[in-house]
Image (spheres, one colour):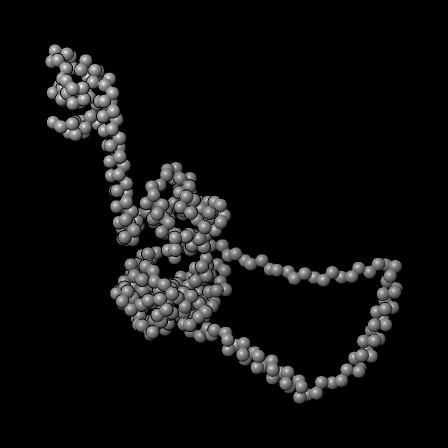
Length: 368
């Protein structure tokens, strides 16, 4: 048996004791240069060999090599799992992670505001991997592996730009059923001019001056000539022309879906938005495509399909339109950024965090 073959036996908890007498003699000849006499007891041979520096060094090298191989094996396995999850978003493990993370959040008892403080601990508006890790440790008591953190990050990063904003966290929490708070913009009060303070001893003088001023105003008022009618007409016509010019620059809201979104913009509560959507009607729409995503956050027939994000009916609203998997080939072959598509759609969700409507579409065709 070669020295390399002895290495696997040495790694056991028994060390040199795991070797047979013949293997001990072979080891002695290799490192010491001579085998011990056969009459020397086995325990004595093991003790003598254990004290040899060359054998000590060899045992240390064997253990270090084994530890390195084990680490590489585990790392490779983790990379393979992570790669598989990233390549296939429908992987059961990925789905389980998403489900578990959502359950953790819902069972935590925290509100949206409290979860925001926990996950954005430094209040910079961006949620880092480290902040997610710290939160999970606090929530579960154990450190999550890197591939779990990577998966949770991809769940929260809605636009897949590598940066998780607080607004994206709110979108995810809204999808889980959390009530998203409405942030009212503070009213800005215009400064009021400070009134002149009139001293009591100057009151008589002020009243006399005021009377004199009033008399002057009456005199001047009588001397102002009347504006001719023609000039008034010119002013009115100028105002009307300017009004027409301004209105022509505004983007019109004309379609049924656009008008519903306009109403949703004014909604304050999640329940109010749901009621508006429930009473809305479907309609023919066009979309100028800005980007294409995959449908991951739905569990109906639209799961696995495509989401097209862009400008609805020429503006002013940007929306996300979901299509079923049957349109995947059409989208991949024909639809790119800035292409205009036509379809029938109905509203199914309003994101108060992003102030964006989501639609479910069908009958997809390419316009331009």
